[in-house]
Image (cartoon, rainbow, N blue to C red; front, side, top):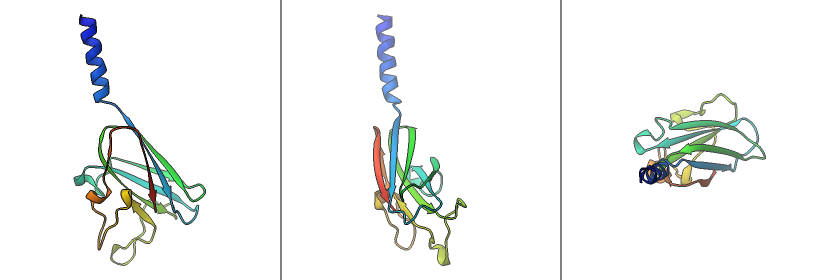
Length: 134
């Protein structure tokens, strides 16, 4: 009986802490120069402020693929940019307008400012693949 109870607890607890994989396919890059800098954010209060996880990936055939492993189930959003000069920073001009191409999950766009979390968020509760066109 104790073994059965232990096995049931183990089974349920492992399901509760299931880890998910997110694969992001970045398309629409105008060339193969530089790299793509990707930020994964969890929660509205952290969006574009505090990274949950960040990655820098190479460009091949004007596309990039980034994978995030071991993610908990929950709500996330992505912001990324094409870092053509490989300095790790989004180049901006007058009034903070980006000079390098950028995009967010769900095609979220900002008007007179950055995109809103509500427009960029998506849920993960299993392995997921998304495409972001820059």
